[in-house]
Image (tube, rainbow, N blue to C red; front, side, top):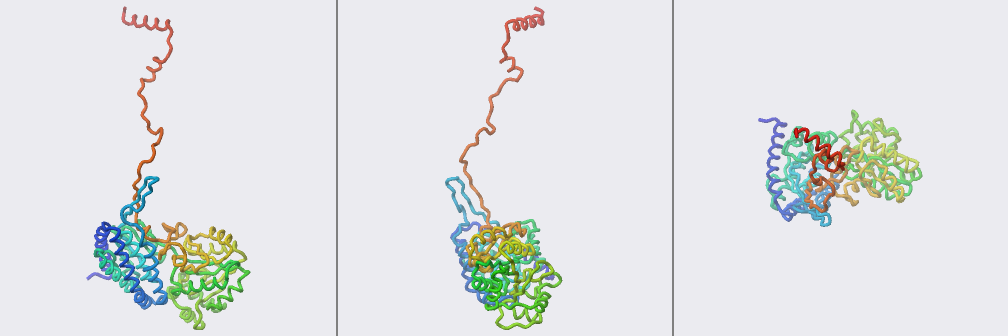
Amino acid sequence: MLDADLDSIQEGRNLLSQAKEAQKTLAAMTQEEIDRIVRSIAEASEREAERLAAMAVEETGFGKKEDKIVKNLFSARDVYQSIKDKKTVGIISRDEENKVWETAEPVGVVAGIVPSTNPTSTAIFKALIAVKARNAIVFSPHPGAATCTNEAVDIMMKAAKQAGAPDGLITSITKPTLESAQELMNHKLTDVILATGGTGMVKAAYSTGKPAFGVGPGNVPVYIHESADASKAVRQIIQSKTFDYGTICASEQAIVADKAIKNKVKKELETQGAYFLDDYEKKRMESLIVVNGRLNPQIVGQSPQALAEMAGIYIEDDVRVLVAEETGVGKKYPFSVEKLSPILAFYTVQDWQEGSSLCNELLEHGGLGHTLGIHADDMEVIEKFGITQKVFRVVVNSGTTFGGIGATTGVKPSMTLGCGAYGNNVSSDNITTDHLMNIKRIAFGIRELDNVNQPTRQHRSSSSSTHTNSSISREEVMDIVKNVLKELNL
């Protein structure tokens, strides 16, 4: 009998073999057949959104059921709507002016790494974008969320088969381990990796030598300029930060407010459900946030009341988010890290230039390339501020949780947000179907190059040419004749 690690590794290998065959069948299908399968997956996921959300909360203990329903529906509806009309079969564009045709080519078999914070919505999202691009996908769930992720995968596979998909198109390791995740990512049958999870998992994905789309941490600062509507800004920030108790990596981690409106912002925060910690309470919470130099996993996705109880402090039942005023950034300041829970740091700055510098300092502490928020009505400040930030999503006058994933902004709807070179990622995009297919270009000749490797006329040797083209006098000719006759003894 195999032990758990070997059993899960072998299961992963078997699923990859099935996926390889399924992908060959899918690759030969028409656009209409692909679209029918994708639509069936999206509709089934939408029907089961509530049940899957309940399963995720029960299994992981993270977040809120009602918010996980919204996340499942975002993947099943918004992501689907963004990709449903995209061509992914055959010639997808023709540039008649430049005589270049583009055709879509699937990448093959996708390894989908799923986190415990978003275990069902991420699976739905990844399955939709993979299958739309004519790929098969094998999931490696987080061990702490395997049951709900596997249920989501089972729902999607059944729906895909009903629409004509081959067996093995969407599968998942039923009893995942760290070893099976490593095997899945490194196996020769895996063509590309979609990695969502902790920093270590993302680094492991990139270390395989295979194409990989991973994301870095999202230590998201939000700047409130003096020109902002403070009441509206605070409402959007709290709604965003408290959504699913802060488990989306694009959620705000620190408020950076102009001194001119500091009191107004603080009053709005308190009015709308924020609780400012005093010095004693702040120290208690600091010891809870970071344990042994790392984020304490026990606080992830917990309510403010649960966090307060863990820290040994008391708050009212109507408190929505915990806030502490902060001045420093770095390891000595736990409130300056990504907290993945309804906890916010609050900083005060003189102006947007100081705010810009502080935001970048927060990003460099863990969050480079990810997301930043700004609330302002001054368009010049928005432009200058946005340009200076080392992120690839600057969300303006909207909660970063929803703006970053494309729910309230015009960026591509996605549950995987690339951090580009700043975050050591291969892409700065919101990852979608475009990233899971290769583009072949059929290019016609439209011009000739001049003076390149033109054939030249053959000439005599240089010495012969010199005599032929030189002008010789009559005396020189007579001397040549005499010398020749002499040599011939004539």
